[in-house]
Image (cartoon, rainbow, N blue to C red):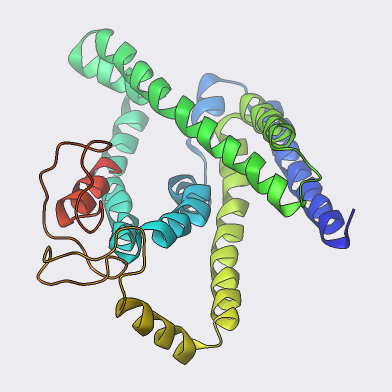
Length: 279
């Protein structure tokens, strides 16, 4: 086992100990359903903001977003505007939901909707939608985390082993501690996420030889047709490398897997509807 793997296990163990601590503390302080599901409505503003940020972006932004930019180019990078649309949704709805919940004692969105529409069908629908979204989403994230463990440990830890260990830790602190445990763990995750993005960017810029060398490399790439999608071939106003240009406002094709859009997937409408889907 190399030195870097040892340090990785040390820091991961410390982080998991922190998660378990908040799981135990949350279990000890949760006396009612309100305490468990919404932390008794007593989370501080800074904890809520950091936790909501980590929940919204998390590993999907830290790992998935750079991967898609690498595959599809800067046309996908326009999807980064979800950093605006997601908080914008909160500005429109969250304060109103919070006020209604505090006034009428609602604990879950399904409970609020059921009371408003005077029936349990909407409550069941809310649970079904949340279930069908969260299960695949969590599965993908846990699988990706297991793969990351495998890569960072140089194959010492198998993908499935890392995935299941992480799943057990997450289950323990979430199931036992409720929202309070999730919020305080996510607060640390948000800080680590921000530091990780900044540090990774600095390392990448240094590996590229500095800002000027990076721009020169981009210029050479933009002058070629290298890339998964080649060039835009007139879509979007010219024949540009698809790494750097959006392939038009919209393209009508036979469908993914049947007909590949010219110049890439991320047309203007695709980016816009993708951001709306995240709201």
